[in-house]
Amino acid sequence: MGFGNMQKIMQQAKKMQQDMLKKQDELKERTIEVTSGGGAVKVVIALDLSVKSVTIDKDVVDPDDVELLENLVLAAMRESIEKAKSIQEKEMSSVTGGLGLPGM
Image 1: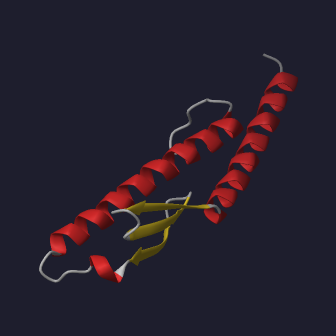
Image 2 (image 1 turned 180 degrees about the vertical axis):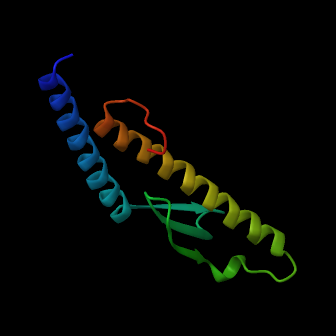
Image 3 (image 1 turned 120 degrees about the horizontal axis):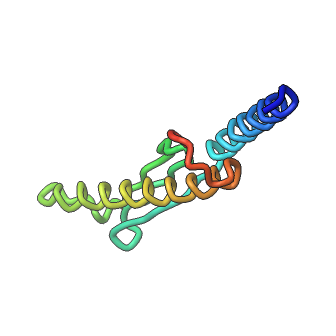
């Protein structure tokens, strides 16, 4: 492999890195909304997995059944993280060409 080929590979790697950083910044700005309990709990999460908000309908707040509320919040959080990760992987693979780089 000649120096020209190595230089070309390095340029491609640098461009991929720049594209990945740009995509990561874009993902921070995009959000998804997930609900549980028929809309009683709503979670908004960015595609970088940062939670933006959690909204709980007052009708689901029952001091005698805190476990139900905990389960609804947990379900919404889990689903939002799964969806965000799925979108994140899809978006990043468009940049990496499906290389499956760790942490991406």
